[in-house]
Image (cartoon, rainbow, N blue to C red; front, side, top):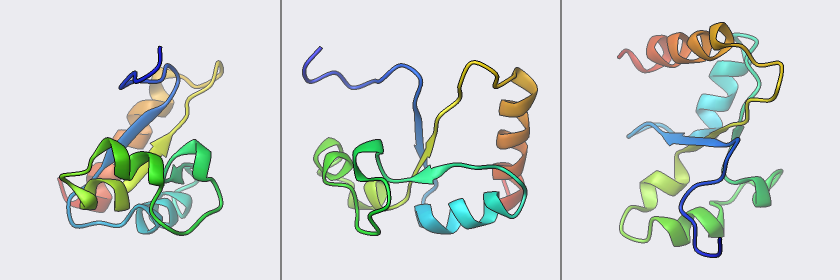
Length: 92
């Protein structure tokens, strides 16, 4: 509904201290396609207004957002590969 805090099918995360576009590039180098920002701001290099409104007390969260959009052919193994790649990139 209006004002919902979740959207089925989208995963939005951020890693403190890392910019979303940097994560996109790092994952792309590993063959993983993701986006930064929100779906309504695809292709825009500025911080998403939608995410900034969702996290007004944490602008770093909006600027560092990473959007993962699994689809019907995305497997559990694919998602584990994304998690493993993020752990490698972030050192966690």
